[in-house]
Amino acid sequence: MPPEHGAFIDGVVRQSTLRGYDKCPLRAVHEARAFDNYSNPWAALGTAFHMVAEECLRTLARQGEKALPPQEAVEIGREVVARDDCPHLSDSQLRELHILIIMFSSFEWTPARILAIEKRLYAEVPCPDGITRRITGKPDVLLADPPKGIIYLDFKTGWAIPSTPKDGDFSRDNGRRYLSDGGTFQLDTGGLLIMSEWPGVDRVTLREYYPRLNEVREAVLHRAELEHVEHRLGLLAMRFERSMKGQLEPEPRPWPGYCSHCPMVRACPIPAEARGTGVLSTIEDATAEATRWVVVKALAEQQRRSLKAFHESADEPRYIPAPGGLLGWHEKPGGGREFKIKETATT
Image (cartoon, rainbow, N blue to C red; front, top):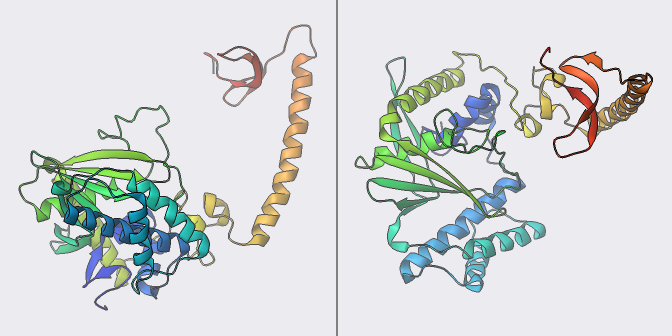
């Protein structure tokens, strides 16, 4: 294995690779084997923003200031994108980066609390086969959080709006504060890496910052939870290594929002209908699906008119038994009525 690889750094597996393997083992193994240092526009923009944020924070630390004037932050951004190690950004991406930098400059910082910026960390995890394997990761920013705590700040530059709990309650997610439907994998791996580097730390707070939305979400991992984290990561690391060596066949697994940009989409053994959002991979597929959608939508409207007519044809509305309840006109909580299926006590 080369010293720096898509899935490895100095032969140590990346935490992002294990996260990908947790979602779809086949895709993670394929990407690790076929890695050729290519990128995509979203990754390039995210990498560039992280580089600018790093330089801005280092400038604040040197100056001892709490915030950078927007114009100074923009100038730092121009210097960064001109560097050879910065990925190429298109004209539209440069404009997006400019907006992200302006939003980032509005935040105030306490330079004395900054412990590390883009520092690569390593941790050893015991695996079920008795072998201890190593994982690595590079948190964006680490801030001191007395007493005995560290804040792990992670920048999210994508356009995707993080989903919210269905019941609106952010305070619970299997005993933890809710972050998104993606769960707390990043908190677990980042917390293990950080607490391995700083043995005196008792808790790690992952703070996700969405500059496009000006939104912050956070959740906490305590040292007492590390035993369970190590067990899960050890199992993943072991299975990933065995899959890479051909000792274990990596299984394909559809994941919401993950299949749509998978490089294995044309060769994926999962039937297209079972991939959810990943079912469409070409304009021809999309056109065929759009044709079906138009027909189905017209048929649904025709059925709806027929059912409404039957429901209203008698002196008293005749509610129609249907899967999930009774179909017909039902009162809405805020006033008015709606033609829909409503669950009843009998159903």
